[in-house]
Length: 202
Image (tube, rainbow, N blue to C red):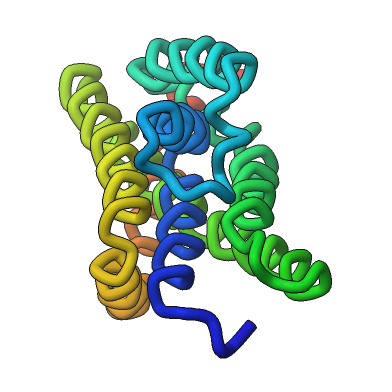
């Protein structure tokens, strides 16, 4: 697995990272790219009309739910499991040219990477939802969608460039991780205070 071409690493890690942001957008984008003959043959399964239909419906649901603060938070909690699982599946397909053992290992690593991205994204989103009004959170949601689709497109079309972006993203995340954690804890404290203040006095 370690002697794979850089382009395959870029495809694999780029798609896994995008799944951590919005896995349905990833499947839908890859499926459409496959239908147009742009995606590699290893991902052609996602271009099946059945996969496209399901991905389109689920993406539509997420698009609507993600624009409201409280439903979006619940949605992110539920997808802490779903997004890594979908990233694992996409990784398994992307690594088709590897031996089965390496494909399974790559799928688990892709799922773990997506989980880390999801955790960072959800923490930032929770802090933003607690601080800003609905209009601002809707804009953040649209930016997340655009980032997921854009990352997927780059991973398929320019995988080596995407590998560089993923590397920069990991470094940036490591540098600001403490700020994300602080913002998350501050937002959680603010939310808890709001709940307590609204509760009837004993």
